[in-house]
Image (cartoon, rainbow, N blue to C red; front, side):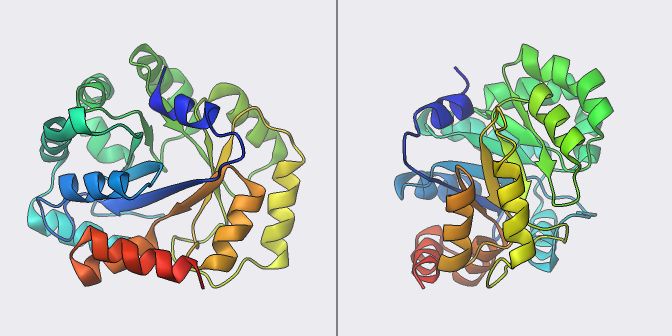
Length: 258
């Protein structure tokens, strides 16, 4: 079974924590250490960002990390080589998060093949049109037993959410707001209404809430309304400041307790 499906099938009453970082930042060779450290410290799933020069859904923190990674020389082939080197040591799901352009340059089939050979369980492609997903990406991903994770926002219609739920597998990435990525101190009543509305839909797929989670209040709100939380900008900031995944995690866990 795909590692993502296994993770969610074994949940019981436990809530998940997934972290995002950009491959190649803060240093080109940090990828393996970050992944293995996060796994050792109990993180349930890791999103590995593929740096891109025009990350339209990302806030300044992740944009800066992508710029750093590209300057450091990170490329998709380099990332796959780094992941292959630690494949046998990684037991939690790895999800690649990146924009369509670099993936299409490699080709969907070679990309999926490299994912499998590198121990990757799925992918998030924010700018992938859903029709292209259904027609071109899903058939290939299914053949390689890879999960293509789709995002929904407060503006996504109920009809589209149900269509996504019907045609995807793994989990649904529930974006807390329609804005770009970044930390928030709390989720206002409008976002809480959005969480409750999606809960009431009784979707087939589990959901993870991301964008804006940086403290105890936002973390608990995500855990109350989904299978768990995804943290990106906060961890990327701490990783950049510390240059060390262990110290960055120490500070993250401290922030999430306050």
